[in-house]
Image 1 (cartoon, rainbow, N blue to C red):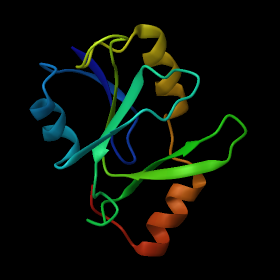
Image 2: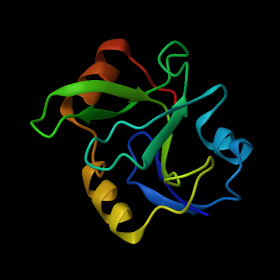
Image 3: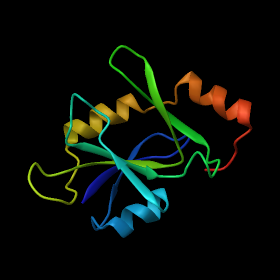
Image 4: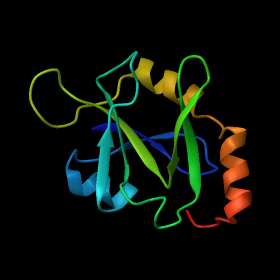
Length: 124
């Protein structure tokens, strides 16, 4: 299955995985946290290290509202994937979603750079 991977200071890229929780955890870390932060597209989920900030992982990208207000900043690598309307599991991210979220997360926001400088975080 296709997911979108977003690593700190790198452009997002598509990766094929087997679709298991273990495959996602290998990318983002364990324990894994899954959230659905995009109101305009509630089937898109974001998986990240649940303790990324506590582990002092490098700040990666800001999650903002449509008006530009920062709701949160994700620390460490995260992935985006689709969830089925009915049932559990994860399914391929679509080409349209890949384009949308690649553009959205192409570069870190200035707040991410500020936080990494302030806290001198260097770890991925």
